[in-house]
Image (cartoon, rainbow, N blue to C red; front, top):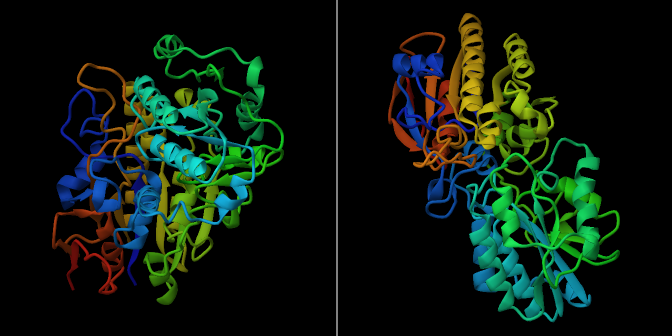
Amino acid sequence: MSKAVLLILDGAGIAPADGANAITPATMPYLFGLMGEHGHAVLASSGPAVGLDEGAVGNSEVGHLTIGAGRTVLSMLRRINAAFEDGEWGSHPLWRELAEQPRLHLVGLLSDAGVHGHWRTMVQAAELAARRGVRDILLHPVLDGVDSAQGTAPAMLEQLIAAAERIPGARLGIIQGRRSFCDRSGNLEITASFVRALDGGSSLPGFSFADLSAHYPEPEADFPAKLYPGGAGVEAGDPVLMTSHRSDRAIQAARVLSKTQPVYSVVEHGDAVAADRAFFPSRPLETGLAFEFRTREIRSVRIAEQCKFPHVTYFFNGFNPGLEGREICIPSLPDKLLKDHPEMSLPQITEAVLAALDSAKERIIVANLANLDQIGHLGNYDLAVEAAHMVDEALRRIHAEAGRKGWTVMVTSDHGNADLMSDADGNPIGSHSVRPVPLVVAPDRLGRFAWRNKEGSLANVAASVLTALGLEPPSWMEPSVLARRS
């Protein structure tokens, strides 16, 4: 009976070795040794191949969703934009509730990456609110600087200001950084500082573009809350519409805000914003790898740090919580500690995978190793190299033990990140890249598989996993890049 470990090295794109790439034969010799011994496929992980706009970087949600779906699924950002263009969003019944309020606050990321949010969505929401009769619309942009390239905030803010000036009743309110807004450690006191700033109103210092220039040389520091001239804060009882495209980075903010405000959202945010207050509730998929596991009575184990745990469960399962699998969630370190701990929770993740190899019931282990993405976001090449060495050592240990116990090891990623740590001028980059990712298959016995194709996308991973398990993939899946030998 065939068994497989699917290791998702989060943020590990592939590209030629240079001074900006932390993922090379020098930093990850074991990974590249497996690639040399067994060959590898090159998989697209950004743009239309994974349901995103042309040129858009991939992200963890989309990557894991595509891997689990076995096909390309239209991204939430494209779904929102299409609904704005064709009028579906504007006709949503939630606008009737919001139009009854004298003021509406929009809170979301000032980002052009579309990973967790996009400034365009905030503008679209403001336009629709104005059309439905809301007279006072406050836009509270949250500066990105992680998913978007550092230093791009001034230009995007100018675009947002220009767009708001064209919308009747729209104005900017409070501008602040993303650290407390995007925290997902579970510590709500961190998030509460973001909400207190929104409530600060006239007590906050005024904003000027010079503040952004002064802040840029300190990328690890959060941008302090500032009040835009003519703006205002959130008053108790004012409705707030959150414009994030996915919930994991915004759910804590929604949870704290909902204690004092009626909160609406573009997408639902768990217990904080239910689907009946979301314009675009998720549409769970009805097919995918997890459904194949359940139908074929294949038990799986899902392992990840808390910060990536929804990705190997909820997103991998096509927006279906608790669909299938034994779940092992390892606590994550707070984001502010990562620069001193590039190992993150990798030791515990590794031990959990090694223990799962002894399972007599389960045939598939899906594990996320988050370091190359989370450390990559810090924009520090040397730290990313440290993380690469650590992930490579974890891979070595897992592969060695898996081979002894008869498991095939499959290594891939969800998107690029640590493969591009600086631009041509040497400026740090902490955002995702558009580069492809590898798929390496290292069976316990050489010669078990042959490559049918060495090019594809993340949508080809699901069928390849089934092939590795000795099973025939369904016809609706994108085809396997593997052929199994007898």
